[in-house]
Image (cartoon, rainbow, N blue to C red; front, side, top):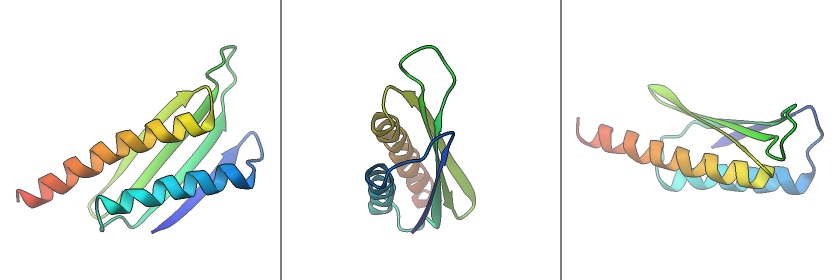
Length: 99
């Protein structure tokens, strides 16, 4: 699976990019049909501490899955987005099985 990561309004360090790519790649354990993924890491202009946004889009045959989370750290935002996508991938796989 090919993962494309973009950081918006900041320059992401190698550690964050590796962490994100590793987490997204683990989604292929749930479903082999994932074609690729796009990750957008963005700094939001808000006055709160929770200004780090992770948007993840997974391309699968038939449609795309998407999750967006805003948290205190990029790692936390990526983790919670991955959890949401894991549920979506499992649900999609169950739908395919029941056809």
